[in-house]
Length: 448
Image 1 (cartoon, rainbow, N blue to C red):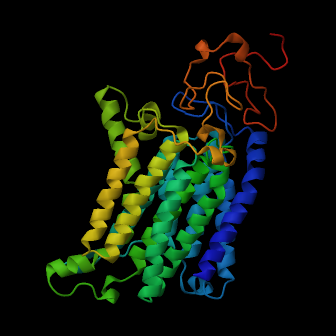
Image 2: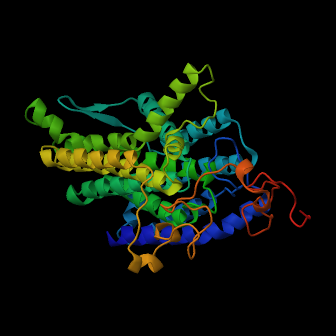
């Protein structure tokens, strides 16, 4: 565990330290797309955050290769090299897309090729556990198709949920934490060495996300872009494929006794396949709803709109940060609830706790405009939005409501003297474009 934590911390530190220079590089190279109608940010923001995340991945693998307890992963398995090969390819395509906006079919082809590269080096699904039947071996073609499908599905699910500041990185970090606990339990509890690569991948993935999140939380200074979202999606899928393809369920001696007992006992084996699906359950539900909504309205299923779940959370009154936290809550509830049920599948209290937490989540959804307030003695230690100062008070802003929230107004409703354009500069997120966050597009320095 100490070596895994060391690898995680080094990966997070490298990713965090490199994200600042990468942001300046993205601004200098013009990797700052114009704001689209469906975007929720108000200023052009640099992308290419995946560059820092990829170098964090490389550093994590390099550090693990030099640790005594993790060096055997590289000596006994070719999976780390397979992961690095597929990650390098998908990362390169993502960097090109962040800069030049590649066609969707090109990215889909690159995702399939990246999965194929990993399959050629041994990172593939070899068998499937079926309760009451046992281990069903897959042919080479079946294993390849299933592996490619899982990789492409996970990559696009992560890419699809990357719609708010810090949302994708946080949800994948939660998924990686749940998967790390599962993999470490198989490796340490059952002494299965084949689970060590997946545990290492999950630890590195957690470090990549944790190192990038401070730069990506609202208001984000940089986006991970497709170079980051596709990269972390591929690593998450590789962790699931590693355990499913290399850990033989017969080693755990699960398929014994009655069919009911075998079904409960086999749950730990199904978790590698179930966990990625539970993590992407929310974005997949969003995807299905989007396809139905667009088709019902006579639009193309691939047409962009503002009807996604995170858009709806903003529309009903949730703040940007609170919408992200709600998505975090549901992801953690599904992932860790599934993990806990796999450990104690016969315990009813786990189901009751999940039901109770689900009720709390529904209450949070029904109270979108509630703003917590700190006591007066703690006001100096909390951000201004949590203080009990009314409109026009000390430190307050004109136009602030009694509950401390700022009323939403369109640019046309703002006084003319307040619509001052934001000047572009090399240190700001509007460095390369004329776009201002307000409707007044006059150049900086011109007379009013």
